[in-house]
Length: 114
Image 1 (cartoon, helix red, strand yellow):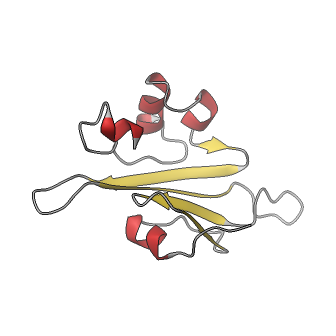
Image 2 (spheres, rainbow, N blue to C red):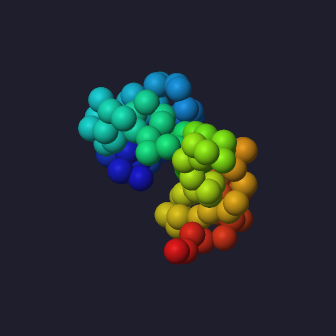
C-alpha cells in the first residue's frame, strides 16, 4: 500500500515470488522491506504475491501469500498459510502445500486469530 500511494502512482508492484528478487528487490532498494524479506523467504516462510493493475472500471488490487519453508515434522517452520490482500485483513488457513493464487482467494479465507 505504501508503494501504491508513493512510487506506484496508485498501482501496486508487479508479481513477486520466493527466490525471485524482481519486485521484492524493488521494495528493498526503496527501503520498504529489509534485505532478508527482499529475498522472498523470512522467518521460516516463503512469500509470493501478485497484483491486478487498475483499469477504468476497476481499482488496483494486490495480495501476498506465505507458506512454511519446511513441512517435515521434525523441521516444520509453521502451521498456517497466511495472506493479506487489498482489504488489509490478515487471513489464514491450514493449507500448507500451496500459496493463495490471487487476491480473491485470500479474501475468501477466514481472518487470522490467535
